[in-house]
Length: 307
Ligand SMILES: [Zn+2]
Image (tube, rainbow, N blue to C red):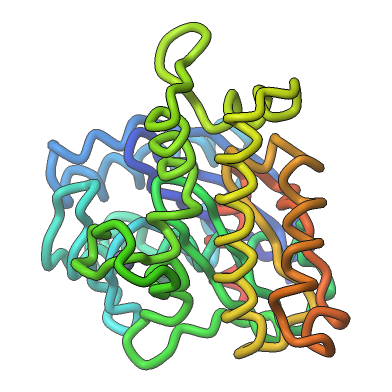
């Protein structure tokens, strides 16, 4: 039998990443095109399919060897039906994306949200390799999470498992997008870090302040930045200890641009986590930075097909 190849599709707000991946994780071909959500879901599906077929042709990859496609995108999904219920960043609502892509590609399609596919990618080929129970946290505009147990995404009954960003950990805290107050993501997302740093008087060196810059300033001895970073890490440790006490994971993977801060994030986070989580939970769990970067999503999406 010819080797089987999965098509991974990672739909971001700006670009769609596409990769052909073998079952051992080897990437045979990859590329990206603009998402351009304004063209509408149907044109989008056709455009992605045309691009994928051309990419396969360029790499002399027979279309028959592709046995399915996995798709990751941000939003509330009905995974069983392959339905996008609500994707705020693409402005798509009630879209049968699974069906549209199946028609355009002529292949079966499986879908999941971006946090879940990124988590699956990290557990398959990245920092969570060989983990049995993994909690993968992404620090970005929000705090997202994916839970992977025995190599499979844990979705809950309505694909809402892993909404760790909305655990309310601070009494009377800031109002969150979800309508509640004091959610983890109002305290520990990259966006929150920058907001708090600005409120404390820090400014960007060239242009708008970034989370990476706040960490750099803290590393360089800026005490204001150090205090903002310390707060962010303390709340993050509290939030992930709630998740860890519930799941008893062997690994917590931290992903997102902030991870480039390296040890100035991970080391203090490990120390604070040891204090916050139950002793036996903390002992069994390693906190590690993600290793696949922006590739996690497209690889995890491909992995969906092999399951
Ligand atoms: Zn919230």
